[in-house]
Length: 224
Image 1 (cartoon, rainbow, N blue to C red):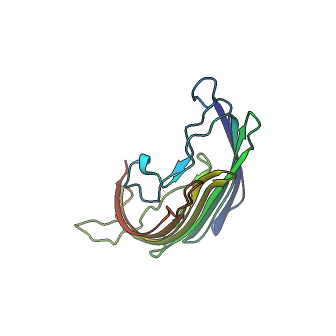
Image 2 (cartoon, one colour):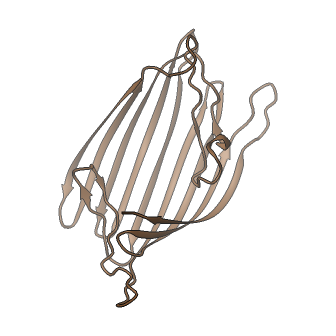
Image 3 (cartoon, rainbow, N blue to C red):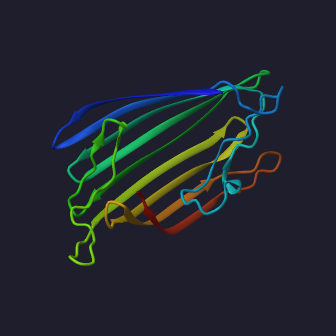
């Protein structure tokens, strides 16, 4: 059982650019875990290429018992000037516990930016409270030609699931990418991701069980 709320303001939105500022709050009142133990199964996350199943999440707190409830507070910002676009979010997780156990605090966030080389730009949509995608001015057409739209992008993200005796790990990722929007319905995404997971095993033996990785990924998306 939970509740969530999001609020935002858009102080700038004109032909030159726009700016969005927002905040979000989420509350978990019932973990849905084993009756009498108030168990939260875990908080976990995978690297930013969803190849392995969720059961292989490198970041994992394990089961958290005697959880009274949880709160998540976050802030967000996004903006667009011409063909340049940037956005970021920060999240603070608070796990409230019973039986004299200390509360737990985790955090994470990301920042990303992109630039459309062919001149298109993202538009703010007041209905969804978010920015839309790229609509190519010259979509690829086999009869008449056209290059579609090309976008370069970069992203940095961080997530920490370490606090007190909980050693869920810390993940840091840096991504650079190239996106090709063939038309308003299809795009190809090429990404190189460099990341690291800092994680140690719990006492009495403390071993480095982290990871370092480099990934090249290509995705295709078709939307209707």
